[in-house]
Image (cartoon, helix red, strand yellow):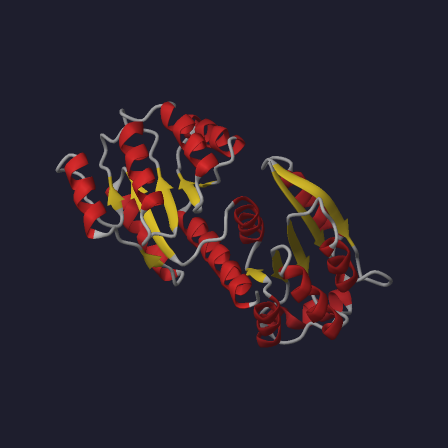
Amino acid sequence: MHCLTGFQAKSLLGVALLDWISSQEFGLSKFVSYGNAMDVDESDLVEYFKRDKQTKVLAMYIEGVKKGRKFFKVARETSLRMPIVALKGGMNKETHNATASHTGSLAGSVEVYEALFRQTGIIQAYDLIDLFSFAKTLENEPLPKGNRVLIITNGGGYGIVTADQVVGNCLKLAGFSRGNEKLLRKAFPRTVTVSNPLDLVGDADDKRYKQAILAGLREKKIDILLVLILFNTPAIDKKIVKELIEIKKKAKKPLLVVTIGSEYTIERSRELERGGVIVFKYPSVAAKSIKALVDYAEFRRQNH
């Protein structure tokens, strides 16, 4: 269960978002639709939620900012207490004028808003999937010490596709120390590729996954674990769900899962989510969410 607050500028979009959120097992502490901000604007709302103890992450859709200096101040103060994820409408020349006429707020240039978000610690989302994926990750995961990611997989091609996404989001592929690498080579069959991605191959079971994940959590050169599971392989069963949930409870590093499939996989994904493990369908969304987590962690380090 995730606890976040959402607010946005338009009621019809809000209704659609609430409908979608209800199917995603988010915990929503509050939801605000403030229309054209005639009396209460985005700065007032951020300032209010800064003091709200129920809110762990603030997710917002905005089309502009009415009071730039005030927003800068309260957003920066709030970002030092909790993550803010923002989706800004009208972030290109073609939609800029439409945004200004839609709300009557200061639409501003793309560069201005990107600088505003960067300086205040706001994590910028580029679509609705980003908005809630980033919020979910920031609420659920500990802040990493760096950007070094270990990919663990039972499908080689799946691991390579994911590695492309990780590197493409300015994250680093982590490696094991020589000592730990030797230990893993001794523990695993010769078919296992002890590298990154760490390919456990198609006959990997829950025990092999557990061994790999625990090794990653112990390794000082690894900051984040991204675990890919293809549930349609014969050796994988429900045991891995229980193992992951138990490991996650004690993990001090971010530990996220990517899996895709039909009904059986969807049910396992729901079980993992209920147990506190974040699950993504697509490597691209997972990689972007990890980047959001890394960026927020860096902002907090630089400002404390």
